[in-house]
Image (cartoon, rainbow, N blue to C red; front, side, top):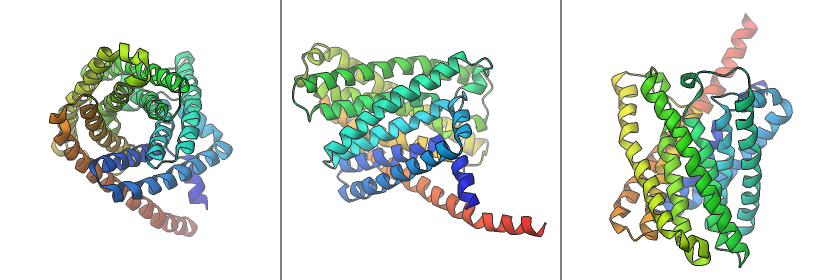
Length: 353
């Protein structure tokens, strides 16, 4: 069991992106009419979410120092917020499955995680004495702060529809506030990321899958904004803000769309032109999530604002998301099997030595 303990000790916080990716691909499949695929992915994702929490609790109890190191590191700390986004996506899936009590529980749990982790991570990164330079310290993982915030906004907007007034009004206000916070955080963080792109040396090794969250953060912001537009009949303050909601929702969608060609070009440059090896890593799930989210957000925005001309985009990105998810999942299985096969060989070699 030593190999399992070692795996738990080094468990990457990025692995909760597996839940984020599987959840949003399930939702995208449901929107596209692939209900069987969606249902299978709901059950699979529930198992993945529970397993990751069991391993994470084990890590907290046994290897607390490793977790503290993750939380206090500029590169890995914001990545821990994937657990909040994963919880929000699971809550979304529970609503689709009709399990509203579970969705409410996940919403409350997600709010607790968001508040605790957000202020713990960014307070420590602010007050720590030794800090890296911006090119060494910032990655696309920082935008998980945006995604986690918007995941709570999204789940809040969905849950508000299942409560009576005045609770419905209150939850819609929480959703609006989280949506605005997420948008403001994106402006702060993408400025630093774009500055790092253009004014520091950028090698193929620097281009990780997490940079796809540049687009994914805007996609989930678009989805949350679209739901707020649909909720205007339930809250007078949302109706008053309707032009603002529509304008910023399209702004978020357009910004996310702008990133797609840029990210594809960088992918081709890194892996085809510069021949940087493409292999499975936990952070690869950070590239699957934005593809699924872009499909869902485009569908919801088209419905909220009668933009039917955008609907063909949804279908294309559903297939891309399913292909990306399947490819990455095969990579995960291959990685786990290879690791299990190699460990006994390594142990035998060490005994002979």
